[in-house]
Amino acid sequence: MFGCGGLHDEFSLPAFVIGLEQCSEEGCKKAMVEHAGYKYLAVDSGGKSTLCDVDESPDRLETGCVAMGAQADLVMEMVKNLDRYEEAEEGDYEVRWLSVPGLLVEGFWLKSGSEEKSCLVIPVAPLAEELQTKPVFDLSEFVSIIETLATERMRHSDL
Image (cartoon, rainbow, N blue to C red; front, side, top):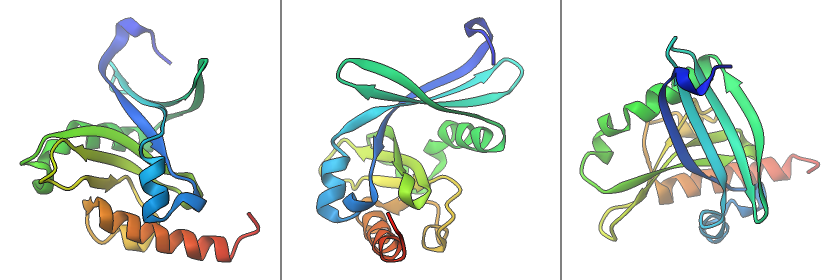
């Protein structure tokens, strides 16, 4: 790792997690208001990116997964360039991290600060073909896709 003096860029995103059983419009709405922790993103002065999940409970913070390498580099590059997405140009968005571990889906949730603009989701390196069709999804479209994927996954799973 690296010392704090060597950090070049640093981001701390509120993180939200949606379980497979929550992959419905109602379930997602509930999960998306339950703050799970933070996704920390950092780059050292040598250009090495690191991601770290920090889980939050009422009485403590706990470090989860730490990742370096190509995926960390991709996430860092994407967070630095979120304003380049045409869909996000005109709007007041809070950048959050959204994860659906049971579907191996994660990405940026741009939470709209106004009633007139929809929230957006930008998946990071999605495996599901349905999430590879475009770079940015309206939140309702994203929820519809993950609901379908979760239903299929739970039908063929021993979870």
